[in-house]
Image (cartoon, rainbow, N blue to C red):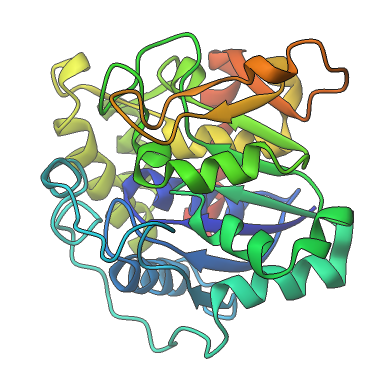
Length: 314
């Protein structure tokens, strides 16, 4: 399966990246950067550093959009700096990669890749959907040939995590998410409904520390920081937000999905709310599959296995 990851890297984005590197079922053809957990340039440098640390410096990385479609500038939220650290990787110092980001823009790379691979290409987006919406706006013809898109974002049956209505990724660019949901494309929404049902614990990280590689050691330190910021577990476990989306791309059978025509509220108190489109309740063939259940034991065991492969360079 050919894959593009669209990341705002971010500790849980870093786990999704390691999953893509370690999975024998995925061919990661490129990583596109966006804003959210960090500023775009910081997230892209984090990706470059992590790929080199895992022995995959040849995977190209592309700078993407730096702000929402309707914004003049993006200002990082204080809560993002707390949860992910000022540098986005839990204040862990990573060796600086020798490679640099590609000269090609991320949006152009997405368009070029869709035209090259068509339905063979899967895109997993774990930040705001701005790069995807920008690609659809710039080259609307790609909708006819585009393959599956899996996003980490949204909340349907549970409250949001930045407001009672909105999840963080969607809230940063509600219009981009609305464009994506209403595009007719094959979209799978992996939201808070399922990502908060799976977790990693401090005990799980010990195996990474013990594997004897720099990648294992650094990832253990990063995720330990991330766990320390999770109040729900008193600092003993973390949710698996972005990795759940990456796993869903490979093992959708582990998820219970509700097919729906989805839309996004873009203004007012409920901005960022992901909800069924009331104008399309009677229409057939909904294009969005909303994950509302997950086999967490399978996901957690599988993720730990694949991450270890990545850290060991397999």
